[in-house]
Amino acid sequence: MASILRAFERGAEELTATEVSRRTGLPASTCHRIMRSLAEEGVLEIGEGHRYHVGLWLWEVAAHAPRSGGVQQAALPFMQDLMDITGHPVHLAVREGSQAVFIERMSHWRARNSRPYIGSHYPLHLTSVGLMLLAHAPVETQEDYLSGRLEQRTPLTVTSPQELRRMLASIRSRGFAVSDRQVVMDAISVAAPIRDTHGQVIAALSVNTPLGSLKEQTMAHAVQTTALAITRSMALNVQMNR
Image (cartoon, rainbow, N blue to C red):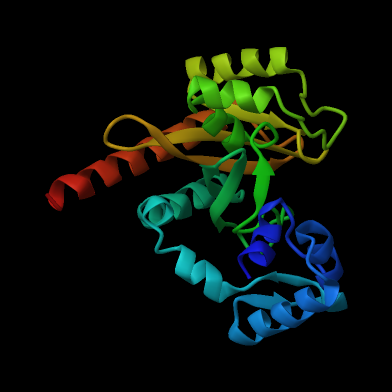
């Protein structure tokens, strides 16, 4: 069962039993039987075309994970304010290996950009939150990541290790990250870091905007201010619980 659930970690939002079979090496009949059982339990859900996606029950359980649950709960009211101020979707992500995992999302129901969903995984160099998390990862982690295959989603996706190193240095210096049409050609996002009480970056917050809507400095200031407020709120909670 674990290998089937891990098939959804690789950036896939919906998979058929046949696709899971190819990813796991398990027989298609076995995948179909287990996935059907998981759907009956609410762990997976079945969409159109017999395509499966992670169910809400699993995300409710995952929300209690110590590494994501604390920052998620602390961030929610601030994310609401940021969404109301900017009018654009707001995302919260943490790093899991070489992926940025989106653990919370807020948007107005009329928002044009519907992705990424909660639970989406993206390679770190593609999104603004991923770039922020990579910029503050250990040097060994950065070099290992940059030495691997760097996926290209659009003609503007930066895949040069040298250029990415320059971008990461700039992100650390400026305090915010921008993903300019790195994932899709009609969206730009800006992200800022959320830190723990030791000053370590544990999550990243972003605002996603349609192409042509981003005023970089203004949006960066708004995201940085919100991320700092979340950081301070978390530190205050730690002090109060001592």
